[in-house]
Length: 510
Image (cartoon, rainbow, N blue to C red; front, side, top):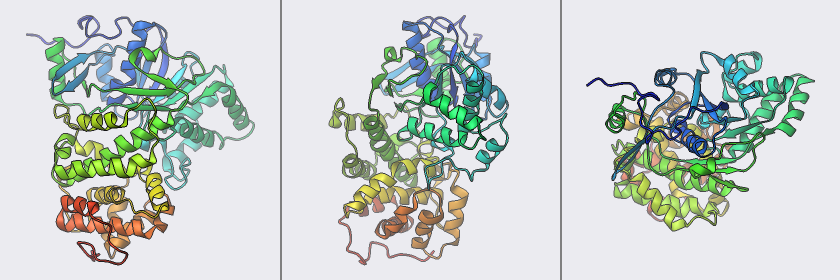
């Protein structure tokens, strides 16, 4: 039988969420990855199906043209394969109206954002895509990419540069209002994005600088938002599932768990799709949802990934099935993250925690530890420092937060002679070369960990002053190297040793 490619002509109406071609392009999305295609694009399709409008999405890929090219070949369609142990469901959003690749055509990205028809810019470029200095939380003016964007106005390559240059063009031409909506795991992501854009604009010469900043005050909104859905990497098996359900070939099917959540501030400068029809929640205070997600879900997820990878687990379900990993996950979630979070009144904490462990145990989804553990140098900067400082300020050393950092370092920058295993080696991280050099050159584990906090560019330097926290991380690194992650997790559960007392493994010379 001939396999026909996915297109509007041959996909069933039952599978296509939004059956009509969008009326226009009102959204530019930066970051055409799996998460966007399984999350915002689905909500937008559901919104347009109930309330039609000019809310089609121009999807902008950062560097690779593979997804953009495949979408073009498939009438800008793809399928979302929702996977659970009970079975699969396949749906086709149909919310995109075009694609661009920023690396190939940065000028067109600027003009697309500046187009008066564009009312919203949504962003999923991961924490790493915001070019933030981990030390100051401000725009990283020492970054080569940021410096280039500041020098070359017409072809910005960074996300913040693209937005800032487009807003300047908008302000100097038609001045139509616009909303910039970050959908990444940054605390107060709207306010952070606004601050970074303003810092970039602040480098412009007067009078342009003042004109753009004044226009932004009145015409640009930066709502905070929280997004939540587990979306693994694509593979041929999901394409085969799509083929079985749809009867046509999709080369870029996106896997996702059935659970999905989106919470936003109701603060839009030029209107929005009726995302509530997809289940989105609008509130005046997103922060409790953000903290709940970034710490309880994401922070715990990181520990599960690093411990599991070090124990030879390829997937998150395999990892959390290890009793020592599940125990460590529950301890860090309940004892160390939860006390630093005010859970929203609408959320039942016990139900939420049960739901998290059910999601992490979704064996049909098979979320890989290497994917969750990647880019930890940026992710952990959002998840570790503030909770750690809260505990340390009360005189407590947060054992499992320390274990998270130690397991991360063991995966990304293993001490000489230690093999963290294939899943840890598969993790990608922009800080890996720098941290590996520190590990190779340090005279002891303690010196290595201290150098990470002082010179590593991962965490604010104020944490380095808490020597008991740094020492405990070094203890755990040594235990992982000599005895494995299960013993290290057991040590984290044990009573905290007295100052100066020997742990299971005395501080070793590398």
